[in-house]
Image 1 (cartoon, rainbow over the protein chains, first blue to last red):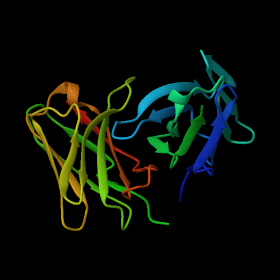
Image 2 (cartoon, chains in turn orange, green):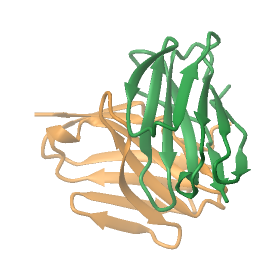
Image 3 (cartoon, rainbow over the protein chains, first blue to last red):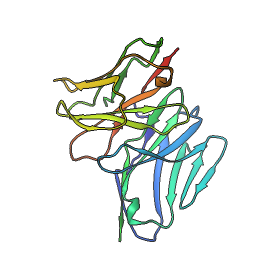
Image 4 (cartoon, each protein chain N blue to C red):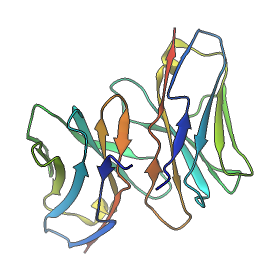
Length: 109
Length: 112
């Protein structure tokens, strides 16, 4: 059973607009959440993380929000750039890491 | 639904020993990827296989080798283990043309 879910397999956004990628999880014991970015033919690279004791973490154009009561995680990219086009994975840490299946973001110039 | 299965979940080995990690992809997925994530580090891509052939190679040490078998499962063989090999090793599988990866839960290797 998938403990981390990314229900949108793809997302298209105009350059300059906000991209919002969503992630839901089932286990309230997860204590650490991460977003990874992956370009074709490359391994995933770490993007941003958040501890369960926080509800927001910001790094430049990237902000991750955590809503523990809703067991929901989101990644905001503002402003979106064509180079942001990639697959984004969220992951949650319990006794091990659980990954979502990814959302393919396309930023349209 | 079936997921990516990795075994064992946890493994403790001594220095200079060997270890074999296994990955069983989602049925009909033809590509398997191996990653290593050390404590506090980003996952590092090791190697990938497509249709039982090595398709891409990352930062995999020469002491490691891997292969994909006819049933598409893959094994990562690690020899002359070092303390620095202690990490979470996870694999992912995908179907050609689909960028979404499904990751396994990982094997936590501890070298003592």
